[in-house]
Image (cartoon, rainbow, N blue to C red):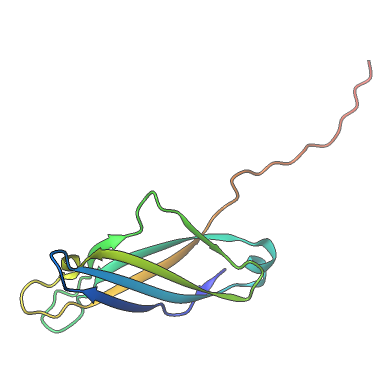
Length: 133
């Protein structure tokens, strides 16, 4: 089963112009076990942007902001390597990251998960039986 190093998030904001935007870049390393390497097991990559509400004066419940679109399927695999580095780039409007209204500072994090994909089809031929006429 794959293991992930702690994903690293970087946010680049463009506050100029009429539509301020943000680019969230998440980088992580996946470490693949022997089975993943030999079978070329595929995993579906999923991400979720949340506002962290664990600070003083906050409600302690992280706020959902955005996640991988349902129609977007990103697959990663070992390609025979023991580990591989992956990057996720998320473009969004900057105001969407304002999850703590008022003077509170917004804390953003991205949760990354890999879910193993089962093969689309499994088939096997039965034993051969001879029929005499």
